[in-house]
Image (cartoon, rainbow, N blue to C red; front, side):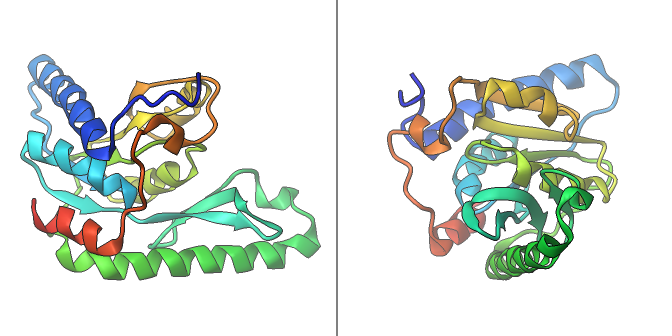
Length: 222
C-alpha cells in the first residue's frame, strides 16, 4: 500500500541510506585505483536531516544545494519545472510548447522560484563549509523524490562544476522515475521504489516541516 510508512523519520531513513552509500563507495574504491573523494550536498530543508547521517558515516563535508519547484501559474501545487539558486533550470516540457500568452506568467513563476531559492541559500550558506566539487564524487541527497525536478535541477547545476561523478540518493522514489533519474546522475541510490506513489510524506511515520533554525543545526553539527 502506498500509505504504509517505510521509515520512522528522516534521521532513521538517512542512517539506512548512509549504510548503502558507504557500501557502494567502498565497493567502487576496491574496483578502481581512483579513490573517490565524496561531498554530500543536501536539498534543504528536509534533505538535510537525511543527508546529515550520510555525511557523518562517510566522514565528509555536508553542504547544501538549493533548488525550488517552479509552480504552474494557475495551480501552485503543480510543478512545471525547477530551478536552483544559481539559476540552473529544467522544465517539465520544452518552453516552446507553451502558448505565447503563457510565457510571461511562466517567467513570473520562474522568478518567484529563483527568489525563494536565493533567500533560503542566503539563510543557510553561513553554516556551510567551503568545498570544491571539481573531481569529487558529489552525493546529492533529498528526503524523497516525487517528480525528480528539483534533484535534476541540482544535478544540472553541479555538473557545471566538473565533479568526477554525481550520485542522486534518496530513501524513496517511484519505480517508474528511475530511468529518467539516470539521465541526470551517474549513479542513483534509492532504498524503496513503491508503486503507486502519491506523496513522499506517506512513507514516513513522522514527517514534520524542517525549520530553518533546525536546518542550520544539522550543518553546524557536522
